[in-house]
Length: 222
Length: 216
Image 1: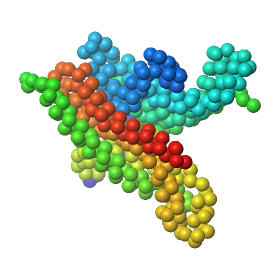
Image 2: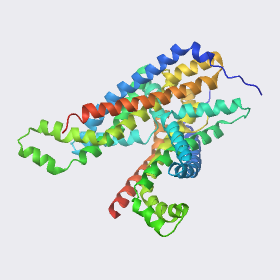
Image 3: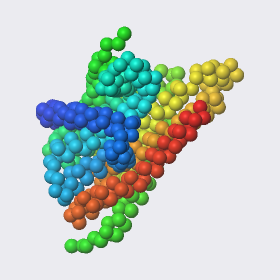
């Protein structure tokens, strides 16, 4: 058997692959921001057992965490139009990623909030800090700081999971790779190269997130 | 056109669910065995072995499962091996699981106090004996809750194998959805199927965590 590896299809289509990689990053970025914001709301509702929100978020978290991302995506993209909600591939992918990350970050951030010692809150109260100040500086920030590494890993997992968004025609990296593959019939080369791009993206995003965590969330503490 | 009653849909999805369960089981058991090997390499004092294991783990944790499956499917095809979707799925998920389990277990092994290794050394146990009789029995207790928790990820990971054409519940679901024009119901039921499989595992992981926390 003589199969000659060819990197030509990769070189010729580098712009499509680069575009795909950028779109994967965009998908991850927006998904991460909305997801973590949802996670903060959910974590507070669950940690403090806020009336209506607590059961709603419990059902939400359990549903999302116990079903695969792909099925959530299919449900949103193929299922919801039957109920009158029409979304294109991008919108469905964004929504699915934000919902997915929201559920996981709810649980992660909740663990952080519950780990804040009660004495710390009492100390803040005795310093006459307002409720908002206590929440922001004494609860949320230390909580986020403690769980940031776990949150970073989850964001990376969601980014890698976004490879299946190609199935609903969102033009991210896997979609570009499949398209080039179908035009050039060089499946192995294209997929091997895309895999390396994903690996590079994962390493890069992890570094950036850790740096972001160090500068913004930990902030200036002496 | 064939009419599908609700019972027909559920019956077919049930068959798909059985395949999902079977594949998960294969991946989890074989992945566990392979993961133990990777773990031993990862914590071994032999530098090249531990570095190779680190690269292996980094690769499988840093790339999408879908890409891993594509590479196996098309890569082995290039080598002239005609590989079925089932074999691709089983192989891909086994490798994927082994990398994650090795990393989870490494954390458990490293949480054992170094004094335990030293105590083993003082008793003139070889490194293998230290691992076998001193470290692993203690690490296993810590490892149970996260391992059960990870099994949920394996079950959910099997959904991706539908893309390379393995007939598990998601693939069955998309075919039925195309035939019945009722995707809302069918994908809803597929979700329910996964939930029925994963929720007990999640609950079990939570219970195990609470139990092992109380004891230590």
